[in-house]
Image 1 (cartoon, rainbow, N blue to C red):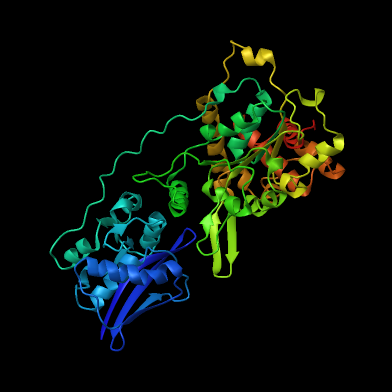
Image 2 (cartoon, helix red, strand yellow):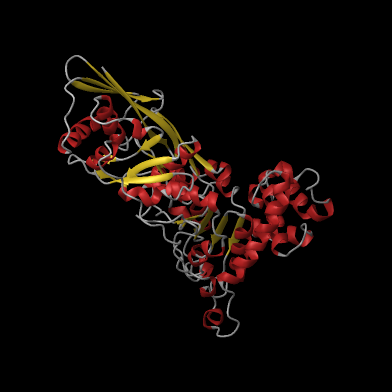
Length: 508
């Protein structure tokens, strides 16, 4: 009998788990059995591995082969185990020595010709290996650059199974990853200076960026709702190393990360179409569960244009992710978690006819208008901090040649300073990084509870039913963001009044 053990990594969502690939060769009828909860792609890998070994000039063991994937209770999905299974079979048969694979993770899909092909999710797999103290990875050449984004591991690449066999026999070497290049200078995106007028919309966008708040924009077509939403990423701070690794790992799993890509530093922007399904927005799948748009926008912006045109069930599926910052997708085969801490921006016309002139030429009845906006449920709207109504842009604003609006760079600097003030304040209290993340119970307790003289208008709104309990907490969070933008240590009554206006669309 022959036995060998090789390491690989399995992914559940974006969480990697080190998997031990065991191969046992015993007497009996020739065949290969795979155990350890393999999916269809892994089960079919038996034929890929056999053909790859034969077409690489090696012999296939004519014995009863058992492949076991540990831990056996963890579901194993995809074709990324092909390379480790082939190596385990060859080591167990004595065709190659196993010493060179001690403490090494193998990842890669095999073609029938023995070529090692790229797979998804190499970055989170490398992160999982580093967490388990494994410092060397062998990955497909096309994935080598992606794996080098994790600084704690040494990466070697292979293009064929034959190259790996020759390396283990001491007859050749592995390939070096492509030389690392400096992170490219990202092209400037849309600039706030392009937005004519809409001082209220610009102010709401700045407050949303400073505190990480959700934003809803209402107004007729051409008012600038989409332009404002598209420019929100341009005033958000760049992602730090931890956030960039999280975001890049999600895009790696989704297969949207291009070859030779660097860490994603710019906050991502996702704008799904209004015909998107729950699975497209939240994530899903029957066997392989992929992240949806809300996870692809993690640490960035999720923009829902023409929000009432989305299915109400799709919109309501966002309620828990917006509250908790993560998505849990449950299937019979298991449960997958994806991070989904986003800033959501919704844009909506006031009625179905969407008259550019607003109420003047609107042909919709009051009941039709209420039903249209009523497609966005009250519980979802209650989770949106800023709710702003934009007026049509006037000819004077559109054709103005003096008083150039502030650029994104100018606003982004104020946002950066406001966020730095929030981090300095809340890091001592509980480690939160934005005002939107602070629990309401903390805001209402000492030493952060604001004096009654400051919150008088918010208290009155709560008593009269203008604000819900959740809405009250969100007003206080907004007030802290407004104060941070103004360079004040704590909100004053004017900050609270402005927060109520930005929340309720009515004066305090």
